[in-house]
Length: 170
Image (cartoon, rainbow, N blue to C red; front, side):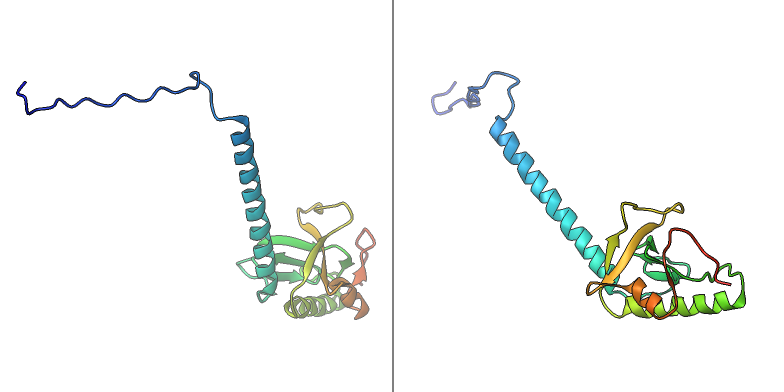
């Protein structure tokens, strides 16, 4: 080799002081797990809070093809695409009424529920240790300022307090 050429040699990798197969320390794993748990908790809290408040601040109309935030009848609605049965009341049927007076009162209850949910933010509260009814609807009580919206419908003669079973309206 001529004297002005220096051969290139790759530097050797420094030897690891750890035996082969040993991973990160227990402290490192615990810190990573805590950070991941905190991040997931924050994400869940904020995404659920955001979707609930957004759904309840949008305008509700009678349900059509799209069932995101809409009113089915006086005691059933969709909130953020989830079907909700207002658990503390029973209102007259509008889809299969047994008589004309039931249909008329059911339409009035439906219109009034629409007004109530559009009047401002409300909460969806769980119902007495039952999450769903036999039709798969979520059982919830709609509450604004500590008062059930269902109680308002009852006070106005548009609904009955739920007794645990349907009773005739005719």
